[in-house]
Amino acid sequence: MSEVNASTNDFKPFVVRTDNIAKELVSTAANHGLKASELDFNLLEVQTFLSKEGSAEEEVEMDQLGTLDDKMLLSDPKVHIRQLYEIEVVRYDNKTPFSGLQLSIGANSTMTRLFASIKPGSVVTYYEGMEKDLLQFINKRKLRAHMLIGFWNGKLLEEIDKFVAKIQVAKTLRVEEKISFEVGSALEPVNTVDDKLIIHYDDSNIKDEQARVDHSKRGFVQGVNKDQLLIEYVKAKKG
Image (cartoon, rainbow, N blue to C red; front, side, top):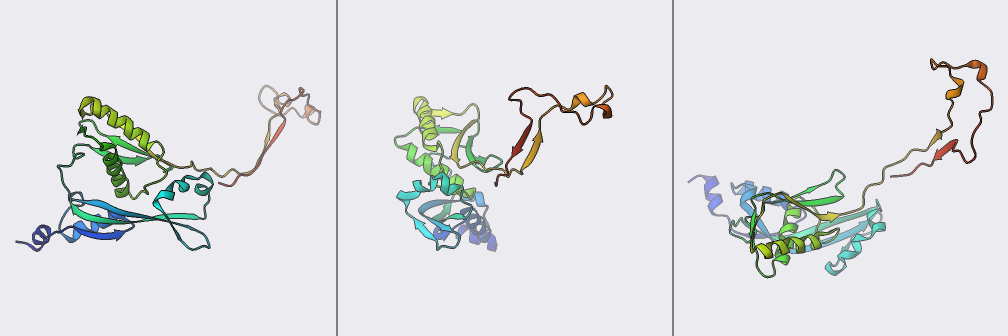
C-alpha cells in the first residue's frame, strides 16, 4: 500500500478554525492524497469581526449581523469585515438530502450581487423543515467560494421559500431548466466622475457646406432661445 493510499484510508474527521474554508479543504485534501471534492465540512460556529481604520477590531454578535446591512456602513471605505469559522472537516457524503442538487454560486462583474444557479437534471425531494437545511447548504456553497454569510442576503430567504414551495408541490422535483435566484446583494459601486465643462450651443451656422469655418461670421453674437441650455458644468464626484 502506498503512502498516499495509506493517508487516504487513515483520514479522520477533525475540527479546525479558519478564515478560508476553501483553502483549508484543498490543503487537507493534498495532505491525505484526496481531491478537494472528496471532502466536506460541518459548520460549527461563525464569528464576525468589524474594524475601522485606526480603531480596534470588535466582534459582531450573531443577533446583530443585520446592522451590517446599513448603507452608510457599506459605503465607508475605512470599514473592514472578516469572518472566522470553526468547522469539522469530513469525507463527502453523496447520500445527503441535497446530493442530487447541482447548485453553484456566482456573482455579477462588480461582485455586488450573488446568484445561485441550479443545473437541469438536479433532483431533490421535499421533507418537513428543509428550508433551514437549504439555507445551510447555500451558505456552505458561499463559504467554499470565500464569501461572507449571515448578512447582505438580499432576497435569499424569500427565494428559498419559493423554491421549497415548488419542491413541496412536486414531492420530488426534477429540474428541467436552469434556475437562478439572488442569494446576496450589496451596494453598487459609484464610479469616479471628473469635472468638465460642456458647451451645448450650436455653432454650425458659422461653417459653410464643406464644414469649413466662415471667418466672415466669426465674432458675431449668436441668437438663442429663452431657457435654452448653453453651458453645463459637471462637478467632480469621488467614487
